[in-house]
Each structure stands twice: as C-alpha cells, then as structure tokens.
Length: 252
Image (cartoon, one colour):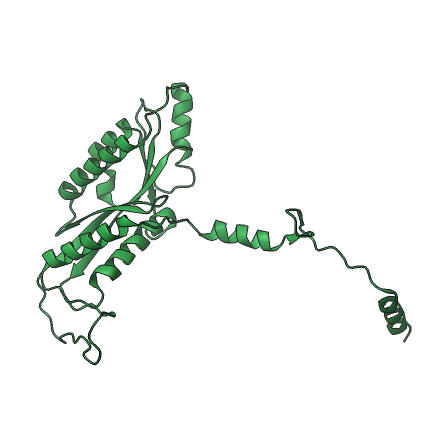
C-alpha cells in the first residue's frame, strides 16, 4: 500500500558480566571466564527495525528515559521520511482519510485518539504499550507527519520481529565475551548493527495466519504437474482385478 512499516523497541539491560557462548581461540586454549564479576553498570539498546529490507537503526545508552528516546526517535523518523516518496496529492476527503487512519486500529486493545486534521498516511510504527510511548507531545509530532502508531502486547505480532532482531545483535556482540564497562557493551552492540546493515536480511512474518495458509496449501492436490489443483484428491479408477477381489471379499 506504499506505507513504510517500522518497529520500535528497547533491549536490555545488559550487565557487565561474562556471557556464555562460542568464540575463536587457539586449539587447546579455550577462553576461560571468571566465576566472579563486578557489577559496573548496565547498558540498553534502542532499535528501529524495517522488516521489509532488514535495515536496523540502533543506539546504545545507559538509560532509556523519554528524554533520551524521544529525540533519537524523532531524528531517525525525519531521516526515514526523507527517503520515502513524496506524499501523493490529497485525493480523499477528510472523512475518508480519517477512515484510512482508523482502519489500522481495528483489533487493537490500545488505541489513541486521532486529531481532527490528519495528513496522508505515510508510515506505521509498531511498538509496545509503555506509558512513555503515549506522551501527547510525541504523538502529536508523529501524527502531524503522517506517522501512525500501533500499540501491541509485548512479544506479539510485528513487534516480535524487532525483538528477534535485537536478540541476533546481542548474541553477535556479547556471546563469549566479558565486557567490564557499559561503554564496551554499547560499542559491541552498535558495531554488530553496523555489520548487519552491510548485508541485511529481510524478515517475513510467519505467525498463525501464515501457518494456516500453509496448511491450506497442503490440502490442495496438484493435477498433472500444472498450476491446476483440487481440494479433494481424484478417486483412482479400480482395475478389473481389484473389482473382482472386492466382490469376493463382500461375498465371503
């Protein structure tokens, strides 16, 4: 539909501790992690993920308050909007445009009140329903630029893909290492994201609906190696011998 879909989430906190995992070491000299470690602070990761292309935009921080998250989010949303095609001329009436916006709230448990005047819809941002994501100032800023927010439960639907992306980055950055400072954790996470963006992998949602579609495909039977199919397998014509055997079993 020409609408860019992004997911927003925050990962962490990541502690200054030895992280289990494999690593490249000389043969016969495996890495050894200490059984004790000092708690020297934590780090978090703010992420904007674009499943269609696999691109991820991240920033490591010590804390993820509204004062830290909102300016970073606005900066990247501005950059993303610049890369999108210019909005088409407003062909819909204000009432029809509002219906388009509200259609994306169907089925959601958490909905926001839309302003009276709405520009053409250009982007969807999927995020969880934390209180900081519902700040009126942030919502007004996003609505004015054609960005619709969709609140989903934790670990559900499209938000799950953003969380999966964060787990991939965390494994690549921290497994088998012992960061002793939060700054080291931040550097590793951001470096892992830069490496991922050099050749990103697109994500496709494969939830329950996709599984139902796959099961429906299995119930179809291809015919003669063509694109034609049937929901019910064609009954095989019995031979003369099979008919005689069936008649004999019925008689006895």
